[in-house]
Length: 217
Image (cartoon, rainbow, N blue to C red; front, side):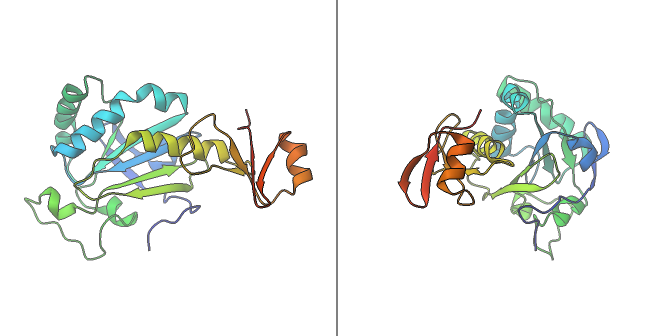
């Protein structure tokens, strides 16, 4: 079974193009996003890492670190970054994990248990290494997304999901469908109407179990 929401991420030792460190040490007191990819020098992944590079200011605004993973080595990662930066017209300042042994991929259940990637492996061999993990400062997994190789990730949705996680983190609210930053939020059912009004002020009772309020500051 893979890592489940609210489980603490394993404190793995990560070899990257920016040195070797422990996952929890790298996260520190920040939020973190781990993007995994099947292989360096592949087209969809290059566009995705380019999008990550272009969003550097957005990650910083959200106190969020980003890290990639690919099943190639450190030197290949360094060479690939030149292509990413050329495509994105932005520096790729985030680290990329070198997972040639598949140790990280298997620990995080990104591959089938019996996966074996021979020398000369292609992206198709590691097709299931295509996930997004969003991790909170307490090192717990808050959200995961899995994609097939043919579908590039939507980073507007990654940012939206991150905003929603941060807005609701430790607060008795939830976000409705299609919510974006600044829109009304849903009051948790753990609060009755009186408690909700005391905590949030005005509430809009749309249904007995569906009450909205302004997003807390």
